[in-house]
Length: 157
Image 1 (tube, rainbow, N blue to C red):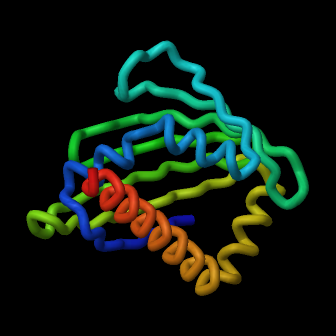
Image 2: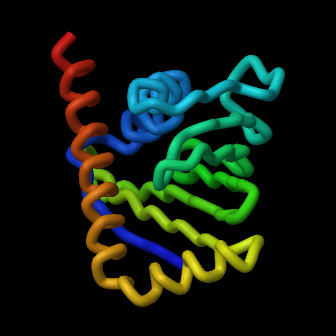
């Protein structure tokens, strides 16, 4: 199943990429929302091969997920692969400069099932496709708004 959305961000592409690739901040944000996140690689700087292990609750059940940064091309592309017991997915965030202070973010998420239960879950998502697409767009818009706010906060100083 594939989800895709585009959002425009009022910030230069270099700053958007810098904010998106600040993985320590995203780790802390996930922890504030109740997830347990830990780095599992030995890399000292941002590069392909970075890995995380995450544990979180979804639908009242504990879930484990492994996430890996598969590809990074500054300042235009971040590509991730994630696997859990039931589902695996690929996510990419592509950035395109629209002007000196405007960037378009294209987010694509491809999810596939690894078990029969997960196939049934994905089938239920297909039946509610319009609602799921709306939620995906809202989350991407929220991410774009957070990036703009972080850019403005840094720009003030």
